[in-house]
Amino acid sequence: MSLNWKEIDCILSELDLPGAQIQKVFQSAYDVLTLQLYNKGRVSLLLIALTPGACRLHETTRGAVKGDRPLRFAEFCKSRIVNGWIEEAVQLGDNRIVQLAIRLGKNRYRFYIRLWSNAANVIVTGEDGTVLDAMRRSPRRGEITGGRYAPEEEAQVTAEDAAPPKRQYAIRELPGPGSFNERIDAFYAEHGGALSLEVLREQARRSYGASMSRLEASLERLRVKEADYAAADRFKEYGDIIMANIGCIKLGDAWLEADNFYAGGTIRIKLDPKKKPAAQGEQYYEQYRKAKSGLAEVQGEIAAGEQELARLRLTLESLLGETNPLLLHKRLKNKGGKPPAAADRKRPGLSFRRKDWLIIVGRDAAENDALLRRHVKGKDLWLHVRDFPGSYVFIKQHPGKSVPLDILLDAGNLALFYSKGRANGDADLFYTQVKFLRRAKNGPKGLVIPTQEKNLHIKMDSARLKELEHCRIEKV
Image (cartoon, rainbow, N blue to C red; front, side, top):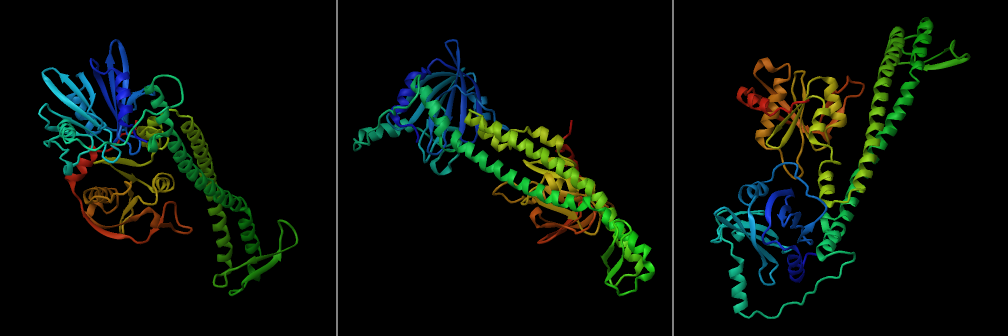
């Protein structure tokens, strides 16, 4: 539930904002803004949340959270109102619109905070009402740079028109000690809609619970494969017995019954009727070699999976213990708060960040395989040059967005550059989503067969590759 106008008046009376200096501005999300204020020897944080159903303005003691990257409106505020002084802080009648009059040198600004659940916004204007910028730009309402916003004039007209009596509101009786600001801060931390601890913790449980379930299922399959590979010695024994009885096998035989000189008794071994006797033994020897090499690989995957499962459990425990909803929200967006730089260092291959899109290049079979197993997901895009050995290139997907053509051309140029077809200067590529790749049975490491693929013809673009080199993420 958003604040009503009486609660806003109560909060403003407790805050004593006039005379405060705005020291810093933080925007942790597109709908959350925090102002760090200094007044009468005291530093405080003013939280402004435009969250639907939980629009509010109050002091918070839970700390300001920086965004993952600079956001437009926060950067605008830093250039216009940081180091400015709040001269006045009033609510315009009972409209749930708070106006801060801010002075910075010779410039004066009006900082409007509209706390309507269906149309919340923060709008900064000049003294004449010309909009300088808005947290949520709305051309239909004129809430864009160059538009006009003067709600105090509308409030005056409404009062003169003697509007009919509105619904009666009261200040909520909230549990806990302290001022109304303190109780509001505690209440919304637990019940603040999409940004409440209750909702965010449940989101963490669902997200990490699903990831852990998938990982546990994968580990179970790997352990079954490990058990099969662990019995690899039997393939060698079969080969030895076949080679010892090669004279008894005729082309077309489907089975060999012979003495088992390893375990005693008689053993029955399946044969391929189309193969010569010597090839039968070699076939089992080949299975033995693959099983032995596969065992080490599977055991490595199991160890990595168990380590990841332990990390997920610790991360979930840490998330559930977080008491700042804004920080919890940020950590969930970052998959538990792992710094992007750390993720970049850990990821194999080359990484390029171009216009907020991440492109990853695997330089050999091992890196291609590692990226497929642990660093890409089903909706990420996979590219590879046709008819030439080369790198797998992946474009990490953005939810709800399709890959722009410019980014596709960037990835295509990288795929061509890191392939054996580079000398030709152009090549055909195919691309599809990772979920449409399937591993080649008994194929070499990293080999996949695409389905539902699309074609793309790429000509090497030296200028584009040079630009991409500047977008490469360096690993420290």
